Image 1 (cartoon, rainbow, N blue to C red):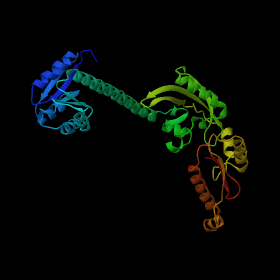
Image 2 (cartoon, one colour; image 1 turned 60 degrees about the horizontal axis):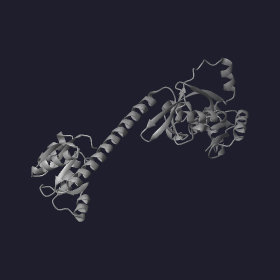
Image 3 (tube, rainbow, N blue to C red; image 1 turned 30 degrees about the vertical axis):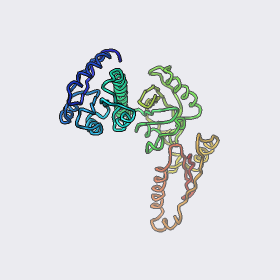
Image 4 (tube, rainbow, N blue to C red; image 1 turned 180 degrees about the horizontal axis):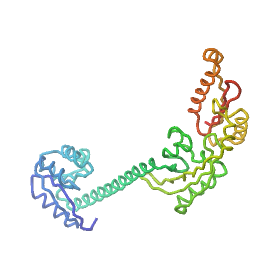
Length: 358
């Protein structure tokens, strides 16, 4: 702080000699001060409104307002600017009282060296805080812009910190068939990918955090989306710094969907019950057998047996065809409440079953 900085200082005193005292004291310390002499509170408000004041020096013996009144007035304009009080007679009790009233310190007008030290200390703290706030505000604004871009992107995007999903966009939710962010935020990223791909993903995240992942490089992995077969996805990784630390951005390249062959569409349709669109019994049993061979990353598997009560009465009232429509709507409500990794099927009649991971 020994370089010559231009300091904008408000000197509150009815005695203009205090302005010379402050100027001379700071000039001796190597500071170029631009002082605004304020002899009454009305002028103080105008200075705070129109000037970029960095420091306020108040002579408690020569100004009409108390320290508390000065603090209240300046907080309405520049709450972060420090106030240093000076007076002729200073002791430990008066220093404590001044600081309790809101001043950063109380200095005797006779102790020029101490005034220089206190001014230097408070200016350094004020400028460091201002620079930090500016950096944080810039980072916050950048994050807002990035989030706006992210939400408008067609590519599924997620932000990861220490392996946990912190933020995702709508395209990510759509891909993994999640209805709300709460279904994926705070969960391990690996829950979305097959075991065979997890080691490669972990390695890519580590390489990204160490600055070793090449821009544009893609990692091909496998993920099970919803109830279907494993899907092949291309992942891109990028390190992003926010005000609360570094994040790894994962962007999934949208697959180039090709028209399904008629035979493949037919084959897929034959796996499902035409009324409920859930898997047939044999397909359901085959899938849960595979799923139960491996333990979930967290939580447990739960097998749910569902059979509506007194459904025969519904059939007698609305007829067989409309009964199937009622069952179809019931199955639709059931599907809405399932998570991406849940599997459901129709057994016989009105019996539905589901394997849940919770």
